[in-house]
Amino acid sequence: MAFSVKGKNILITGGSKGIGKAIVEVFLKEGANVVFSGRNIERGEETCKEFSSCQGKVKFIKSDVASEEDTKNLFKEAVDFLGGLDIAVLNAGYYPQTRIKDMTVEDWDKVLDINLKGVFLNTREAMNYLKDGGHIVITSSITGVRVGNPGLAHYSASKGGVNGFIKTAALELSSLGININAVEPGNIMTPGMEDVLGEKYIKDQEAIIPLGKLGTAYDIAYAALFLASDEAKYITGQSIIVDGGQTLPESAMDLH
Ligand code: NAP
Image 1 (cartoon, rainbow, N blue to C red):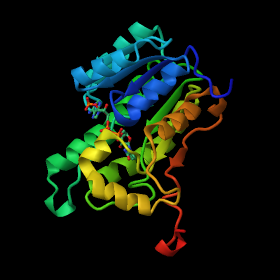
Image 2 (cartoon, rainbow, N blue to C red):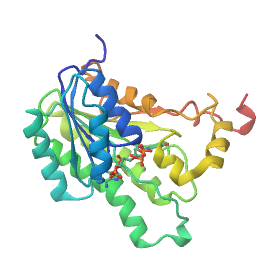
Image 3 (cartoon, rainbow, N blue to C red):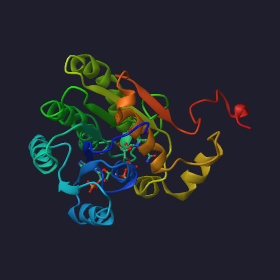
């Protein structure tokens, strides 16, 4: 079967809700064994229970991607449970809205710590466990890479940083036979999106997306599945935009 991850051992950060939860579900349904992380224990355990009847093994581990100590413990515990590691999906992310004029150093640091330092820490730790043929897939964003978004300057810097990071990481990982790529979601309906941006934003966005609607978490999960599969083994240091065409129009006149 194409894009198979059957029997593969996978660690997914930020897997308890939203896009990460769909990635957990899709990988489990494709026959992989999955460990996923998050900070909220109750939510993580609930998600784990939801998928406990899937064929693959599944476990939730509480861990903050921005903590070096948590990250070391997460990978060790995951490998103890799984018996090895084939794929790491670094999905955890945070996108609070604050204009630059109101942004504190604490606001800036928190977003950069989770979205960018977290990717560095988790990639470095993954290198201790992944073998030749291993894959790292990161959830980046169109924001900060293709487009801007007022209120998300810190987030934009973090995701622009992620795309820069994977270019050099791909070169350093190539001698180990490990590839690293990213998915750039556009506007995807997730709990995080609904909480932060609200209903009006979602309606307005639909009007400027050529495919006419926001994406689903599964749209991102299937792109991650492709990049994590052996069929993608000759792709490294790249990113796939999954945005319903949002970044295509040059002007509003180009829409319908
Ligand atoms: P979400 O609904 O808020 O879910 C985020 C997940 O990450 C949760 O499981 C959360 O669990 C976990 N998480 C957050 N901070 C963490 C930390 N410090 N350590 C470990 N886990 C953490 O977000 P989402 O919309 O699914 O976004 C997922 C990824 O896609 C992010 O990287 C985001 O930047 C990216 N993205 C999303 C969209 C979109 O439209 N939704 C667009 C572009 C890119 P806990 O709260 O329990 O920690």
